[in-house]
Length: 292
Image (cartoon, one colour):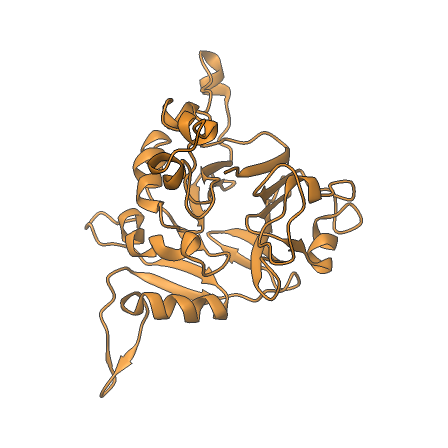
């Protein structure tokens, strides 16, 4: 089983390869900068795929077998659910951490990568859609909430569409404010503030001081998922679950749109071939980067 993430453009910090730290005088000279941390680039079942290991083929799957042989930071075939952490450094040097998607493997990602990169907390969350590999980690979101000197947990804003909000409310009613009886409210386990956004490239929103432009794409016919365009000094487009790019989104990230992208992050599930009519993901062979 293959899962391939395609990135093109400026340098990035990746969860699949440890960041290289500057040495000597470069430490003092280096200015604070924003970066991208890939918490996961895997499919919903993650990699290694359980079936490949408990029901091995002959010969065994090379990808999943290798996923167990190396430490994850040096292992391109050990992949958690797709998720991106934006380490946004403001002009005053303050760092804000913006998390896109909180999937089934979120707790493992926190233990493995937040500790590795010394990420103290998450300041805001953005959800692309309501599938399990994007939202089921919300139950553990309180683990990474910022806290003040009194050890009181701060509220964390969550940005999502109304469709996703309705689904999350069904999965996690105790995480969402609800009225009961004579106006009594259910106590929430996590301090999450829900903000509805539109699936519209002309309706941007601001999360932790950084502007995001929603990029609606098809994730299987009849199902809209969001990607996002962001970045002040460099334009980054992030498309994590896509089977077809809609015209408005293609214009927004193309050379003929606002301006040239510096980095495109595009998920594909296979290197070769063409997806069938019910495919929920592109293959790399289907991607046309000429106009971007």
